[in-house]
Image 1: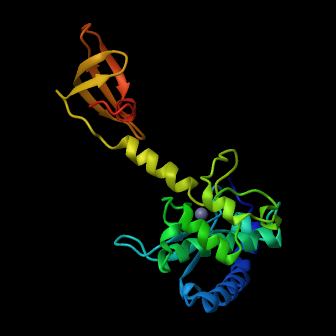
Image 2: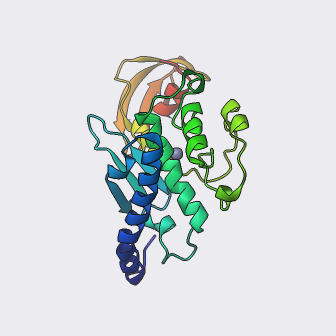
Image 3: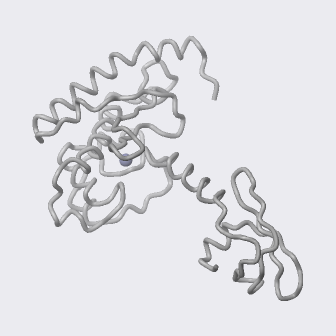
Length: 230
Ligand SMILES: [Zn+2]
């Protein structure tokens, strides 16, 4: 998407106020939970598919929060409501808590970024316990007990903060060469075959495989990985 340069300028100028609001909120939460989320660097950007994210410190990444101005900005066509904006900040703070707080054992039953530990943190800060973004969600009354007991099924709406990462991960996974010439592979439909050629494409890997019927078929390696045949 092309952002109108004048809108972009307005959005850039807004970052100071967003940052002040986020830090003020995080400071309040920090005091309540004895944490230091308000001192974590906050980045702003123009992501179209990602509303926000929290990246914990790791070997290859610095700790940070990220928020997309295309969602939190005031100058965009459809700005988030004040409540939904706050909910997004709390959503990310709950991710921060997940990594920086001791989670009681009974809330560790469901793994995953948006698993029970995260939902437990949501219940503490009053964030909507769903990874999906829906307008007005923040105004609903959430039944945390229920949310903590059930896995999330709703996959119909835009996910707040893992969407892009998962896409990127899938595409690198699919483009990494996993087979070599002469490997024997098993295809669910064509049976066992021998890899004769491996071709690296921008987002995938194509294999030329000779099957028992002596036909050479061109098959994307992802089909072999997905069916766990190797
Ligand atoms: Zn999330």
